[in-house]
Image 1 (tube, rainbow, N blue to C red):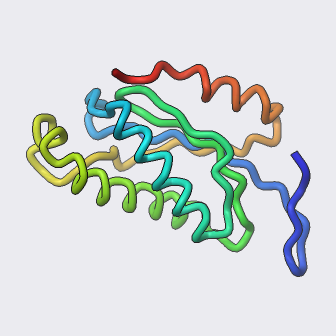
Image 2 (image 1 turned 90 degrees about the horizontal axis):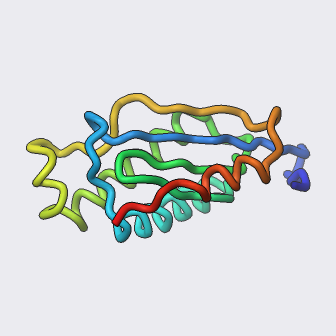
Length: 134
């Protein structure tokens, strides 16, 4: 992957993110995963970042992001989680209320790792290998 250039910087910040559902419940359906991909892409676009890869299973999602250096990582993650939770809870309300009595989707925790030590293609392949929910 080629480094990107800003007005005063050249950078290559790749993050592997994993978000799990609250109580690790298997609530994510294929349509939800598809919509989540769009939401994550929109949040990345608004923050001058790039969503390189996205997939997941019924209880968690993986994302590979090329992060713009102007972003605070924890604030960026908060934006991804809050936007996706808010929109999905609205659009898939009847589905999610079967699993949660409160307005929740994500666990409060997350995994983030810099991917500088592993080849990006290996991480992309790993994310693509996630079992798609029904």
